[in-house]
Image (cartoon, rainbow over all chains, first blue to last red; front, side):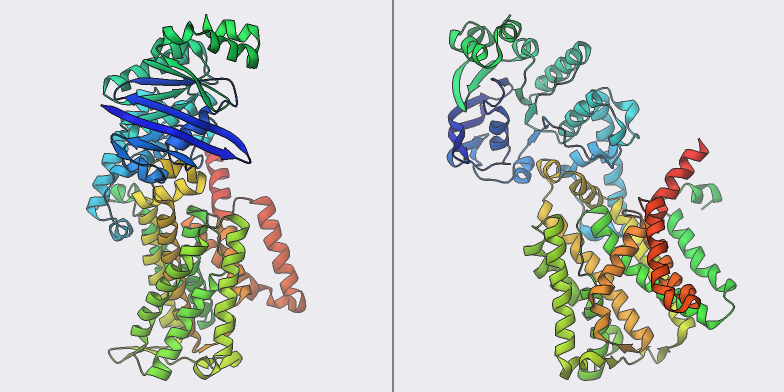
Length: 262
Length: 316
């Protein structure tokens, strides 16, 4: 089954075609990575898919249903969740409360019940907290549950966002540079977390600069350059693609290209 | 419930506030103290509602006295012009305030920050102007008398009676607000405050949550407005004026944004302090301003959160 399908996606900002006629098709249960030089439109593409931007052209289908133009919260209720490249943490709340918010789409209480703290709300809160604790444990943050999120280190916040997204039990999970700022040990742990999530049947879209992670974990790799598709294929195919190497050469210089594609 | 269970219970803060309401009169040497304390609780009720909007959901309102005005004039116009019982008018006022908040909130809650502030400011001014100009109904700038609240032949008169009505209503309002904050809705609102975009991608309908809390805060203000009018026996358009709105915001910020108990503290300071400062005659307002500035400089997160933080630090 195709989890996510985008056709001829396009969006323009101030005359610049940030995404220009991109087609993607992601099979259910895959890890689909999007790579490309800075400014090539990777995050823009994620913002289009998650409903933060509305495409000026093209269409998006999620699990067979057309969802073009739906708001992010509507998409979230259909099982899409994501993390952010430049963290979007609820910094006044504890780590646990952050992840509890991730459970929102599974919570069923009304405003009157909430005001009166009816037994249903009490049960709901307990169930939500338990699921949130489990999600925190998955990313190794169980000990930080009651710490204010604002006091956590950068790497922990990256994982906190993943736990929050996982708590929503997504069918499609978009990760925007999850390994940025992670040391090699943390990146390996991240690799394990992603593999475990995929094993549960979640489809993962990964935007990432850490090529070792991308090449290890991906089923398909999609290469963007200046808002257009440069290449797509298995990690092996992409690694061997001369155009890709040139795109990196042009944008990053020789050393990074060698590092990225070795 | 054992004492230990009570001490660990989530009901403890509400029980503590209820205890304050019950014990406080033992310290009152005269009826005048009942009057000031009743005003404190009435304002604190409105401030709790505004704090839910500002402190938790992060949405400013510079026009909340508009809802105070709707509540106040509901218990004046209803009984005087329509012959309705005051208690029914109080409830009707709350319902009207909620409906107005719904209609006004839908377009203006899309705005953020300063733009929302100015839009709510406009709403407050609008209410005040309508109350001033519709003299046939409202008595114009001179206001109108408000008949006494009567329930089953019992008449709510005097500062002592109103102390208990306002105090107990505040306890209920305090409890409901705390309940709300520890619920799915409350978590969603706090999430919206910190990151609307993250709240949105987690499935929270941001616009509808903002509207919900705007309506709830309007109902709090409306009930407080009705109490104020019934207690004073007189209402003028000043109740809905800009200065009143600013006063409510100042109480929220002074007591502590996001602290429900802080709402009471903010109301205490800004209701009691002017009474105390009257001994300084013409310097009263200047001193009040100075004291508020000093509070904010040294307790910049508001009185309750700042003191709680330094107490936690000191205990370590």
